[in-house]
Image 1 (cartoon, helix red, strand yellow):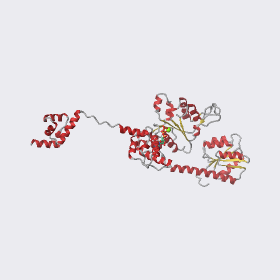
Image 2 (cartoon, helix red, strand yellow):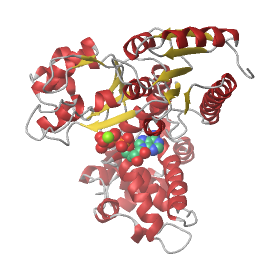
Image 3 (cartoon, rainbow, N blue to C red):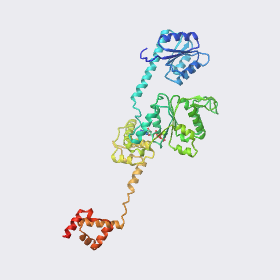
Image 4 (cartoon, rainbow, N blue to C red):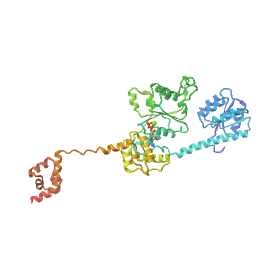
Length: 470
Ligand SMILES: Nc1ncnc2c1ncn2[C@@H]1O[C@H](COP(=O)(O)OP(=O)(O)OP(=O)(O)O)[C@@H](O)[C@H]1O
Ligand SMILES: [Mg+2]
């Protein structure tokens, strides 16, 4: 058993007692930990206590059918390998089993050597797959697609990093286009749930009834048109993460149902009375002020507190302008690759406009502007006419409305004029009086009035006075 670190667990599920005993002894000798079960229900129950690496599964058993057991095992954890043991003549269902994710099948009665080989192969496959996931995880620098280094954004990254590996419910707040969904994905990708589904749903995009059946699923016949069971997104996200986008939009009725999921960690599909346990991490997002909605009675307070265990608030782009050049560069790379065109330079004046523009649509607006400009600019530089009208409009406004010069009062004009003449005459008050056409005493009066203190402020004046006094 190469590469095996700890003893691997194998479940044997077969209604035939003698076969169970035989396999149990054989596999224990090979160094595996073996547990045997007479039927599917018992084996599925045991999954909650212990995760086997492999299940040897009989197809034909009284009680739960082998194919169904297989499906449930795979639903629970698709990394558990399953080898089907089937009697001769049931090849058709064996093929079906392969389609449902079984690793292989062997026909009874089988040679021990054949079984050994299949078990080794299945376990080796599982090890390689796990190694692969590990490697990929190591290669990926965490949060590499969350671009930004401004203090405001680094605070967010720090929180994301702390919260990601936990199971805590997270509420992500922020204006439209600030990266709420991106952060939700980063939380999932950097959590132990990352190899399980990330399921996102926009709660604002569906009418109430549809949203309800999408989330919770239904049983056949729950309403007209429910011709078969529907799993629903909570179950589809089993062991993964569900992202409830625009949570502020959900109706009061769904708020109640959601509160129940958060409290009990179970759902009741439409038309059913049986609660179903769900193992999902919940991340919600909103661009509305939920606290205000609570105060206004539009959002349940208890639900708010359940969702609001950890809040991540994304700053609008205008509050992290330092990140704009970084993001521009990132999007130029991204869209030149995507569209197969070489990256283009951004002239300084255009970057200045990017920095001055308030970006009401935040990162998404910037991203769209860059993709558009990259495609529409003819040369190797982004050009003005390739920019979206909103940006150009902002530029025009800036250029066309000149900043009004400060209005001077008559007195201020007089003060400045006197000062200028004084400077030109090298602070000679007699000459100044001559030039201004007023007598000397008026000059002194004006100086006092305008607070021009010639002696202390201007050494030259002192010299001048001394000279004239000689
Ligand atoms: N920090 C970032 N680094 C790189 N790309 C980002 C960043 N923030 C957002 N983006 C990009 O901007 C776009 C919008 O982000 P996202 O969809 O996550 O925003 P949102 O907050 O969910 O918006 P809305 O409220 O409109 O749904 C996406 O293409 C995303 O990849
Ligand atoms: Mg979004």
